[in-house]
Length: 343
Ligand SMILES: Nc1ncnc2c1ncn2[C@@H]1O[C@H](COP(=O)(O)OP(=O)(O)OP(=O)(O)O)[C@@H](O)[C@H]1O
Ligand code: NI
Image (tube, rainbow, N blue to C red; front, side):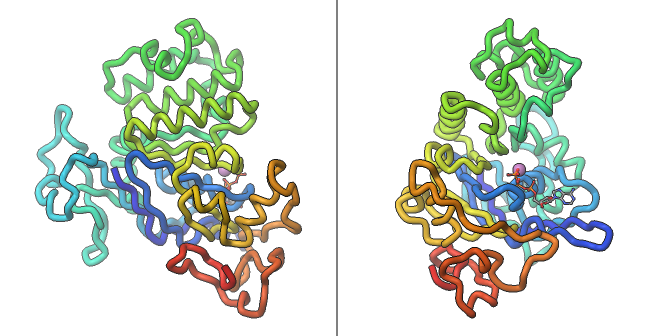
């Protein structure tokens, strides 16, 4: 499994305004690795996740690429390997999904013919082959995503049926740490932790190689946050790729191999977790860490800009202790993977 997000941008069109929700995002993720996407509320994290799953509303325009190559680490990784793998004779049985290769010639897939551009893939392909099967989404506020009038068991059973999986809801639930009797409950009878586990079980029902977890710990108390993060780490160590979205840096530190810091629609720092927590480079990233109670506990002054009125230059400029005239020009990600003129 490999995911390469390459120049991904999302715009929402509103009457008289345009929301620049994601701008030119670039990152890679592969099996066994966990990337944490962090940043303040409203910076575009969930929109990025939804763009990967084709879940954005009709007023959104997505550009760029998000290449997904489902082949495992043991499959041939060279670009030449999958010459006829995409040509459509894998319609039945356990064969690899028959993916529609990505868009235009000359702008082709980086991983060979078996990869799919999630940006241009038709909804039919996303619905039948991607969501739940290749990418499992653990949604922000899981309780809100469960159907209120159906038991957890009924919802798990339906998802398994849709995915054509042989497992029983009880087996799936047991793997997620739920007892059989928990499954007879309706969503409003589930505690936050149990709803989280049901959401995890649903996301994992199709055994997807990529898990996207959107704020999986919001509203949970510390022990449950730790348990959820340990569970995500386990999924990763079993060989899945995990993209976890959070504004809880402490939780990110527990689970992530890599950190992507997002500010006002852009990834402004992309770093291995160890060096990042030892010394983030972007002034915004430093501010986020300094704001932690376990560190200096000093909040970043000011507020992020409206995504309908982003400046031409660095969006962090008004809040930045390092700002100079140079910052009137948009800083782009450099080789050190920091978008800052002064880092
Ligand atoms: N359908 C939509 N139409 C217009 N704007 C939208 C739409 N959906 C999201 N947005 C805007 O896109 C921006 C990014 O939202 P997003 O949900 O990705 O933030 P986030 O980083 O996930 O924040 P949080 O941490 O609060 O979940 C916000 O300004 C939001 O208002
Ligand atoms: Ni969000």
